Image (cartoon, rainbow, N blue to C red; front, side):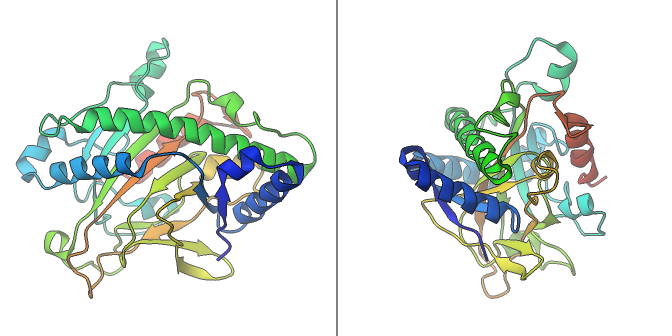
Length: 312
């Protein structure tokens, strides 16, 4: 499929020839599928397992308990079944996505009241699962650090490809006080959601909206698929030691279309495994509010896309 595995430790410690080879591999992958697998990240799998354990406790609570945390797309809290249809972002007709989510987002104020009121509000924490807060706060801190390391690699890869005009801080110069989002996505089995309607997915076909997305996923038959023009839809490769990383629309625009935002979907619960239940940890990294990305305001674009996938 052309989704390579990139070892960040090898990138950091490699000589000039090794780093150039890695940069060229990254450039080639992002020109096609828009996806990478990333190892050498030093994120403890036990930390991710603890978040999943707490999240499952929350999602299995009665709906009337979860309802007190219900919000719309782009807000902090519980996204109930039927709240979101990602295929809307492509202008497609689609039934709602077959998932629930608990969403967190950037919460360290900038001091600008208007910006903070939209993008840096406090997060909501479910009191029924108090252990979730310290685990998530630690994890999103690690994800921000890892996202910046990946953006440094991407800036170098772009500079290597173009020969000039980019470098390690090409993107990170715009992540001094960035926005981010973190979704814990729960994909329950058929007993919860019923059979999928025609054209219905756990998450419908779409591209992400920001710069990079870091996904920690569980493998499953109703799992992630990636689209390329050459091969159509294919199951995404899985490595338990790797994060699945894809670039979004802002990154594609930032590179003047050299790189492609990774189009993907999550299949519905499989008929042969109706009890399959998966939890994905999805970290969306953006940039500083007000960043001009080739003539558009980054956060005006982000807000418009979040609104677009909201089911009224």
